[in-house]
Image 1 (cartoon, rainbow, N blue to C red):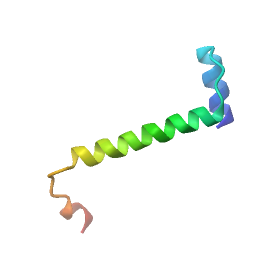
Image 2: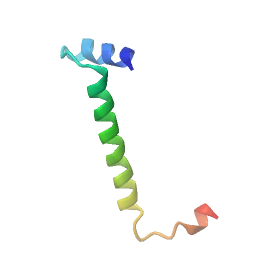
Image 3: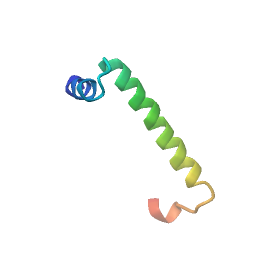
Length: 50
């Protein structure tokens, strides 16, 4: 994670820390999960699981 932080800090010119990027990634992940649940609402997915 520190390597990604260093790359993003150098590329953007903004001083970032690993905790900030981890929090942003978790929020983005929660958004993706919510979007997947919303987009699959009403679809019959039972054949995909059994």
